[in-house]
Amino acid sequence: MSDSGEFDVSRRAILAGGAAGAAVVAVPVTAQAAVPPGTAPSMAKVAMEVNGKRRAFVVDTRTTLLDALRENLQLTGTKKGCDHGQCGACTVLVDGVRINSCLSLAVMHQGDKVTTIEGLGQPDDLHPMQAAFIKHDGYQCGYCTPGQICSAVAVLGEIKAGVPSHVTDDLTARPTASNDEMRERMSGNICRCGAYSNILEAMADVAEKRA
Image 1 (cartoon, rainbow, N blue to C red):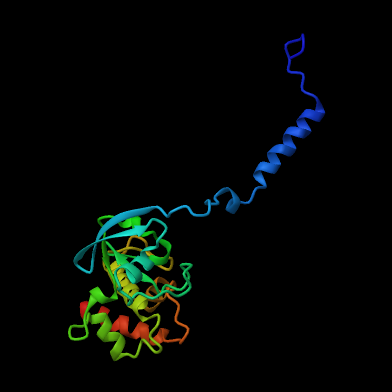
Image 2 (cartoon, rainbow, N blue to C red; image 1 turned 135 degrees about the vertical axis):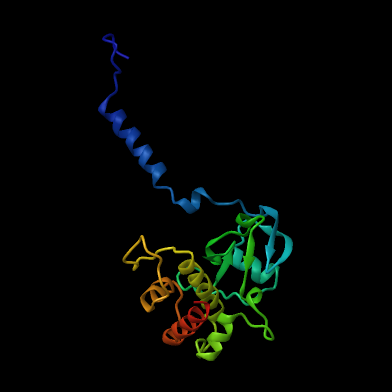
């Protein structure tokens, strides 16, 4: 500090400090978060209700709900598609709300109620949406079908509850199961076989029977 009471910082010192700060920021995130080799994974016990049954298991805290369902609980009906939340093949219901299970960690669902395609119905007692998909041939190759059916069940639930979507014109009125509403709400579930029209027919069939 100078005799005048002001900090005496040279231009060279400022430049040197700025360069050091930039070097810290430029360190790749992967390098900052690197885990030393040989470090054991962090494990946690998780308990949740899956398809009406209480299930408890120990899992690596980095495990997604999708992998926990398939690998820890052997519920392989839920499919892994893109694994990036873009195709919807992994859609399941959590406390009645549809989610992409590949984007959610298993440890985030302590105490939750999870419903997979196996929990909606069985071959001898199909859920109405499962029966409608068969009736209208809404499955084709079938890989995306579990996620499509879980999402379709949730979509009709959202409409019944009055939840608006992006295409709802009147936000004060209760939405209806129109073609536009169902197409918009199902847009997160991708079918490469192109069974969209059949899927919508199946959903409309179930919606009409509920009305």
